[in-house]
Image 1 (cartoon, rainbow, N blue to C red):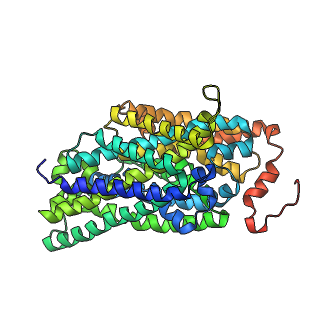
Image 2 (spheres, rainbow, N blue to C red):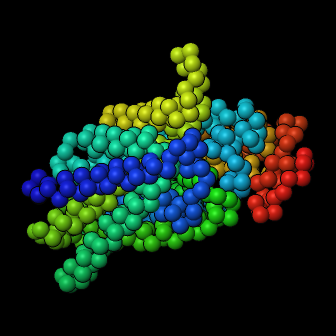
Image 3 (cartoon, rainbow, N blue to C red):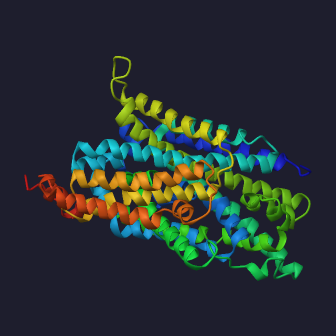
Length: 504
């Protein structure tokens, strides 16, 4: 590459050092197992919302949205719309009751609501979804370092994995909260400042359009029934998948109470809405200035390359350094949240059980679980470097929408849910959407309706999970747990009016 790699090296170095320093500072507040898992449930809405924004705005948000708009047009705006609206669904159906459940993880909630028989299935799904979501974070890091400093694609995943592992194992959730809050504002600045400069350059050029004006809004598929199906499937996955993402849900356990969880969600909606105004700007400008990237099939790095294409010389390199810093922060923050969530489940269900004849203490077991949470997707990312960033994230949303969304919605709002119904629904939705994941990772490229259904499974896998979960529960109504009424009252009664009335 002919460009100067110094700004990219400086950007990655500064973000890495800042992340480690803030994490080390946060370590002062991490002393107990509760600190490592849920920050002792003391994170206030403003800080928590910034941290959620930091971990939720991943590689797909920072790089993928702009690349999709650049390649396919305005129809791709369904991605950021769906990812933001998912928090509205979370606010309405899940946030406050889930916090009142007192659980640490999704498997904890399932066990408290339905008994221990559901826990194992939930644990496997949390780990699978977490690893699937970590995969594009590591791949995005490889793309970023290749574009910024011409590094081999394996370097980015290794650096992100090591930094995240160092931060998570040193301070857990308490430490990572401060890191992720900082990284949200860094990512916003890293997109906002260059976007403002590039819009000024575009206006000064007097070139309001580009070579792709005629094909600005291309359908998500080839049009007709297929295109309509793909659009609706994408909407279902993004709207309903958010509430099933383990790294998102675990954040609501850190709030002091249900009211704080709702306030956190409202602030998150604002922060996400502001952020998602920016990637489409890069996608639109790419249609004016990025023909060579499109021709080379490098749309995923549009955000990183556009400043150099529009602003020659030192100015373009400095802007590139800034967006590189934001991109790297995106990978670090989202990966940290996922490792916390997956590591927590691995800790409770694997590493905290008798190990080599003895039981590990809580913090040591968490560190072992976090290491497993990083290493598996890291090796997969290095072995499969060419799975599309946004595509992998979309599949993670589809799996989450097909499994934990029905479990949470029915578990919180329907007394008739049974353990048998929950397991059957989780298996139906998980196996259905999981088949799509296997097909995509195997580089499935065949055409036809079967390929369409596998590439966007949410439109059929989510209804399937709901129907099976409800149907089997009705057939096994005698298995409704005896404590269901008491547990439902706990979920839906604000903490301010909860009093000890004895057994219900």
